[in-house]
Amino acid sequence: MKFSIVIPLYNKAAYILETIDSVLAQTFTDFEVVVIDDGSKDGGAELVETITDVRVRLVRQANAGVSVARNHGVEQSRGEWVVFLDADDWHHPDFLASLIQAQQLHPQVDTVASQYMLMPQSEGRCSPDWPALEKALSIELITDLPTRWMQGPSLCTGSVAVRATRLRQMQPCFPPGESQAEDLDLWFRLAEQTPVALVEAPLMAYRVDIRDSLSGNHVMPESPFSVPGFHQRILARIESGAMSAPQRRSALQFLAQQHLDIARHNAVSGKRLQGYVWLLRGCRAATTKRWWLTAIMLLFWPAKLISQWELWRARRSVYSKPASDASL
Image (tube, rainbow, N blue to C red):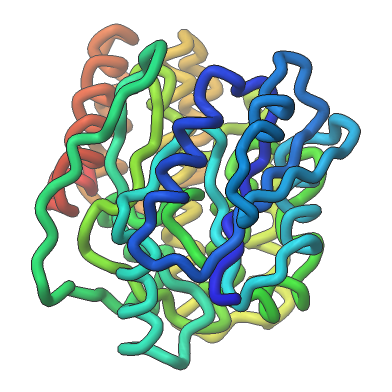
């Protein structure tokens, strides 16, 4: 079997059948769907049980969080490649077929993915307005994921497939108990080992309220001055010597940019002092326009204006290709 699509399910009864339908509509059919019910209480698991397609399996577990559910899905998977899809998102009908092309073009990689698009939060069934695909797909080989990430959106949980043998070597793939940047943590660790082949077409749709997603691509600390777990693990790998010199440089630059995101987030929340602390922590980026713009924001801009700027930037970064304003 080529693919296992792992779907963690927790109280998403309103969406789960639509999500599974998008998978069953794939033009490439050698796959299974493994739904990990994480103790749902809204009848979603019972809806999955009504599906008669033999490729769909339901696995139940006591509620333990999305990271444990995904790790359990890896253990239950039978495919050569594992895809992670949230229970309220969609795959384009040619998603898996396109990933096959990326694998064939770059057989050395352990991670393949496609670009993605945002779908506004809505009740009831809806369908993404997928763009027309070119016959010859363009595929980007990402050799430096931290730098690529700073240029604009690249990976989303449901847009990624990883070689199953690699994932089993890395278990627990997702840090148990964490639900913020737990996927980004895995993508970065994978990219430190082999490049990522990215299909340059949005073949996955992510349901989101754009206003609630302003920090969605950033890692926010649990408390104003604490260092997020994802950041701590990157620093630990840097200090251990596990990264090459170029990887260390790009990882440190990425962390500096993340610190600027946290500084702005604190400013929007009315916590200017904490914002200054994170601005100083991001001093590695002090030679960039973004650091100086963040400093100006903290000194002079009202919180509402910063919020509006970040909302504009979030919309633009997802709905367009990486551009110069991604660095602001």
